[in-house]
Length: 120
Image 1 (tube, rainbow, N blue to C red):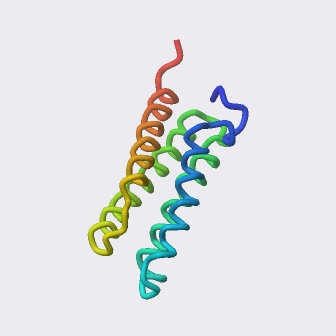
Image 2 (cartoon, rainbow, N blue to C red):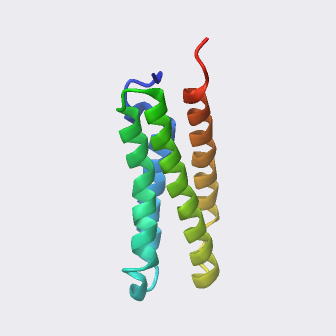
């Protein structure tokens, strides 16, 4: 199905793992009153991206794999929204995270499209 032997070989998974680690670090600087609000939400969305890539990679069909990539893409869109909110509300610098997230979103689109292309 995929040229990668393992999800760990996928650049998009590696980049999303890096993004997740960065989200955990930057959310430490947000106010403690956000612990059960935006911090928790951002961390869950971030973790969802590489988790769904990994789970999809282990599915038996390209269609199933693509569905998990779509879920990962949805989580990426949620995370983008949350990053924009904390940037605006708390003046947290988010540009580098947004750039990395955009790259991940584009990679997910390409991989999904490739999985769903008819085999010739």
